[in-house]
Image (cartoon, rainbow, N blue to C red; front, top):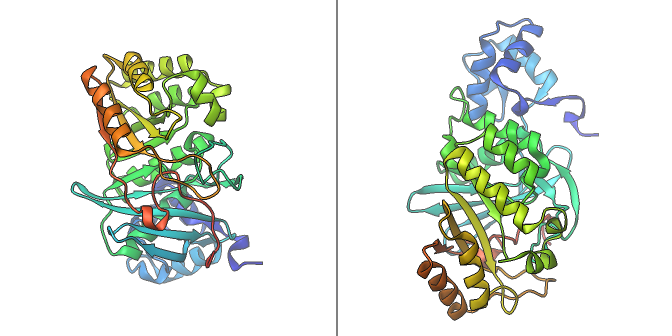
Length: 346
């Protein structure tokens, strides 16, 4: 049995909750905010919390572990992207990706170990769902990657393994933790959350976090095509999804991003582009075209550059804002849709 089995992960706690915890251990309530601040710096040992009394540090260590995940395997791409297989205290594994952009460094974190959404072109769902992560475990990926790379991380995308809205409470806790000014203090507009289209949670998210960016994995111009590759579409229809997305833009006043993986012979035709343009014309929206990142064991192939370029031109001609995503980390299977649980050496 691991040493942490009887302890709680202290990264899961807010400053207020830590204030209660330290008073129960005989400390002063304000120490909770001090501990929270140290955790946001990525400390791995209570002895690093030099302004916290030694006896309180000892008591904290007896009841709470600092849940930064262990870096089991690290790969670096020729473009500077870093992918890390992280292992949590109970053995659960996820992958996270560090990326460098002109606007600053970003990390793509996982919200679940595995995924149960079943999208046919994605690696994350191939092994099914192990479990959802806690908010502290999501935060731990950011802190561990920052320590690993020695680089500041100013943007977080929750687009790794798992469906964030299938773990809504964990996601909510993570956003609250990383945004807290007494800790990491990440601006809400520097966070992006991606969903395959769970309509009730889109509506809830608009009210809970109107400043956080939302990306919806659309990947098709209509219901018929979408339901072939995305099982979630069988529960949440295309028209209903677009209506929920329109409500989101009206509620928040924020632009929504539609992710569209361009797949050879499946959704990359000029007819598909024209139909998508008709659907989104006049929207406060942006389409992010993603030349499919191929996954071993999946039959879908990436569309050729000519098809992607033509698709983009048709959307632009119809007044739909669109870009083609720059692919990072493809050579280490770190690109969009390629993350999965892997044991070291596999």
